Length: 238
Image (cartoon, rainbow, N blue to C red; front, side):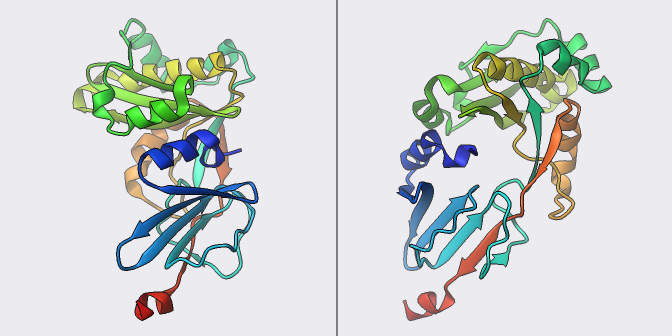
C-alpha cells in the first residue's frame, strides 16, 4: 500500500483543507475551486472510481493505464523512485552504499543531529505529526533538515532541504542514513526515496538529488504517470 492510500495521509489531507472520501476502499481527495468546481485526486491505486464528475480529475495508478484519460506531461507524483529492502541487516545496507555515500558518512560521523527542533522550517510538519504521530520524524542540523514518514510497511524520505553550507558539509548523507535506521527500528520493510529523475518526464532539476539518492543503493520502481480528465463543457456552462 502506498502512503497516499493510508488513513494517516487521509487525515493529513483533511488537516490541510481537503475533503476526503473513501469509495470502494480507495481514498479520494477533493478540493473545491471557486467558480470552477471540484478538483479530485485519486492516487496510487489501480481501482477505477467513477463516482465523480469534477471539472478536473487526476488519476495516478500503480500499474495500469486508464482508458479515457490523457497522460499529463507534468505528473503530480514522482513517476520513478528508489526503494531499499529494509529486511537486510544494517551491515548489508551499509555494504550496498556507493563509494561517495560511505565517504560522506565517515567524514561526518560525529555530526550532531537534532530531532523535532527545527520544525518551523517545514510549515506542514505540525500537521504531519498530528496525522502520523510516532511514524513521523524530523531530523536536522543547523543547515539541513528532512522529514521521514512511515505508513504500513513502507517508510518514506518525504521532504528535505539544505543550504549551501549543508551541501558542502554533506549533512544530508548522515540525515538520510539515520532516517533509514529509524525506519528499520519502526519495523518498516521498505524505504522509499520518494522520487528520482525519470527520462520519460525529464526534469533536469531532479538530476542532482537523484545522484545523491542513488548513492544509497536500492531498486528502481516505475509508475505509469499522471492521467487527467478535464470537463471543459462543465467549465463553459458555469
